[in-house]
Image (tube, rainbow, N blue to C red):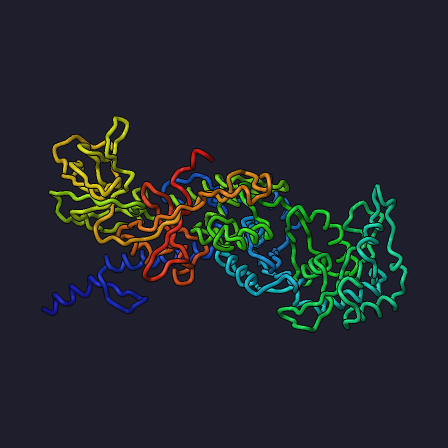
Length: 620
C-alpha cells in the first residue's frame, strides 16, 4: 500500500501558483490557460495600436503572429517623426468641450494617441476650455468616455484653464515686449484695417502706438471688470505686412460676461485659441502638435508667439481631416435634428456622433481599423457611408458569434417532430468561439417572408407541398397546410420530409419559448450623398424610412451566453460588460444583419439595433 501511494504521488506535480499537487496533464492545461490569459491581457493593453495596424498586416504562416504594418511606420506620420525624431514623443488631443465628438474626431484621437504610443511616448487629453459661454459638464464627461472606449488612456487629463494664471502672466510679458496692445475697435473698424479690394490697403490699428504702461493699465482694467464684452480686447502686435491673415494682429484676450465651470467668477477675461493653444503645448512639452489642415495658416502665428516669448517650441504639423458623405456632422444641424424630433437624441444610431456610433454597436476596434485603412495624408478624406460600413462588416465577421433571430415570426407545427437538443457553433469559421445548445421543439418560428401561400419555380423556401431545410435540424420539413385570419397566415402545418431529396435552401428558426425582443433596423438618415444640397435645406432630404421597428421579434436561447461573455474577442478598448455598456453585446443574426443591444434595453425588454447589414446594399 505504501509503495502504491509513493508511486501515485510521484506522478503528481506541484502547481506553484496554487500550491496543489496535480497530475502532469492537469498542470499542462493550467499553464496553457494562464499563458493564454496573459497573452490576452497584453493584447488588450496594446489593442488600440494593434487595431490600427490590423488592416495593413502582412501575410503570415499559420499560427505565427504577423508583422504589423501601420500608418505610423510609413507615409506622412513617419515623415513627421523623422523631422523631429525625439524620445519620448509627447502629443495632445485638445477638444473643445462644447459638443459631442463625431467620426472625424476619431481620426484625431487615433492619430494623436496612436502616434505617441507607437513611439513609446505619452498623449495628454487637454480640454480647450477657454469659452465658458458654450461649455457644459456633459461634454467633458462624454469626451473622456469616448477616448477610453476607443482604448486610449491619456497620461493626464488637463485643461487650458489650469494655466489661466500663467497665460495671464505671459500676456503681460508680451505687452512689456511691445508685442501686444489693448484695442477698442469695433467689427467695422477691424474689417477696414484688414484691407481688400473694396476697403483699400491694409493698415495697423492706431491703438498699437500706445505705450507699454498704458496697455498694461488697460489690460488690468479689462481683468478687473471695467469693460463689458466687445468694448476692449488684447491684440498681438504681429506683422500686418505678412500675406497670412493669421499675422494681422490677432486677438489674445477678450472680455466675457460668464462664470467658468472650473474657476468660477474669478476671471472677466479669457484667452483666445490662438493665444492659448501654442502656449499650453509649450507648457506641457508637446513634441509634435498634430492638427488638421484648417490650421495650416495658424502655424505661423503659433510659432511667432512661442518665439516672441522665448518659451519651448513644439512642432506643429497638419493632416487632412476625415469627412463622411451622406450625413451631417455640424453641431448646429444635429441640434436641429434633435430639437425637432427627427432623431431620438445626440446618440441616435442614425447619426455619426461617436456616442451614436457607439450606441449602434460599432466596435471601437472597427473604427480604428477604418482610420488605419484610410491612412494619414495632408489631403482631406471624403468617404461614403458604405465604405465605413464595409470596414465594420469585415471586423464583425471575424469577431462576433452567430445566433438565430426571427424578425417577423410565424409558427410552424411539425406534426411528427420530437423535442431535440441541437448543438450550434457560435462561428462556423472560428471554432475557438465554441458552441451552445438549443432546444428544437415541435412548434418552431420562422420568418414570415420564408413562406409563400402560392409556390413558384424560382422560390426555394417553404410553400404548400414544398420542402425546405431547417438549420442544423436532422430532417427537412414539408408544408402540408396553413391557417389564416383574414389575409394573414397565422400558422403553418408541416411534416418531416425524410425520403425527399436534399433541400436547395436552409432557413433559420427559433424554438417555442424563445425570448421576444424589439429590433430596430437603421437605414441612412438622408436620401442623398449631399443632404446640404437638397432644395430647401438638409431637413428636406431626410429619409422617411430611416428606421424600421420589429416589436415582436424572437431570438434563440444562445443570446444569454453571448450577453454573459460580451465583449467578444478583439473588442479593442472595451472593458467588462458592466463597464463597457450594452452595445458590446454583439452578434451576427443569421440571414438578417449584425446586431447589438441598445441602451433602451431593460431587464424585462431587450432592444436590438442593426449595426450593419450582412452584405453591402446594392443601392449604395
